[in-house]
Image (tube, rainbow, N blue to C red):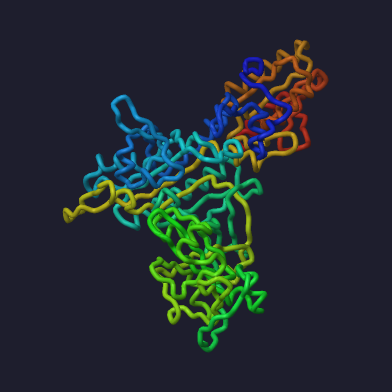
Length: 566
């Protein structure tokens, strides 16, 4: 490609709304163009890099025996009703009515469609196992798109689905894909952490995220300082410290005027927060829920939502609390009737707690679980935080930010059972197919690569995904010998399969070099009159401050060597 023919324009300044490094650089380098909030076009340079990422993904998925398919972006809403996700998926499905008055949706993901494909084609255990994958456009009407390609509404994703007879087969394919993902991210030039994660709207029993740690990330990751644990904060667990076991004392009421918070109560009574119980009233479409947790911990609302089967909940407002005859700041599970109670398991890790008395300006002391109140569900709903102990380890949790670049799920029978995707076993029994789901956001991956591969001058792209591997820059365009050799080298490298950009513009050398640094082309070949007289050319790598002078006889072999080091 010649620069004079390239449809591209660089910018000296980034748009004012571009907050992240990747957003700024991808706009400035002419990779992407925003046409609406969270919706971007790929310009030629961006499309070349994205195409190379696609090819890497295809190669690694094909290497594990996965087969590529193509599922529709526009889908009938019926299949989402069948799976039970039509009204629960978040953000809500983007819908429209076609000319036949049928409700249609723009697919935010493709579990339903691929399950239908399996249902129609799998009959016997002999048809299993297999892995299908696609690289397809999706649409999610995100309320707060941000960070350029990091969080968008329309995006391209590689999603894969495994289909198996039993848990052993599911685990095997799950690990196959994890290893393929490791290869993909390594080839794309980023380091990732594999962390435990919440399954969210996809569902299933187990899931892991591939996270690139960076301060620009929006995910909070908790990692052990000993390297033996890593999890998204939505999923993370920790070792809860029990209080000392005391003799159970009689419950009594104490006067606490204007003491409404756990902090105020602990100071007023000269006790640790761990000696208090925090009671929070939540509202859902179905019912009011009282959540009880030890006062030194906070509620993880993702854990709470999952415990309720995905039901959305929110903290009740003061008006709703008063309508139940309760006083904000003095709520208690003791004596409360007709309310569904969920308690964190920390309430059983101590005795003689202080909590509200369900009347203004009063608290109770010496409250004990089982004796003084009961709960409908007791489970871990506490939010892990940095500084907490790692469960089952001597490690301490550290907090990092990260960008999720891949997510894998063990779906089990979440979709196959609801949608009738079954196989017949050797004994003619009809069995639900076990499924796995595996995703990589293509545009987000490019953004993550830029976030971790840049400097003050611009992007430093890995040679595997750079739009061009090499750029030839002739200095002194009017010099016939310089031009002739530049043309000869350009044609020769192209014929050898090298992605070469030939900068044949009239721009001054400084402008050319600045643009190349911004775009992140890995290898620069500078051909000038003085060096050419000595049968030398200058080679500079984007990730180095130094340059080398290479003889004309060796330059092609040197470029072949450099471009093979991927």
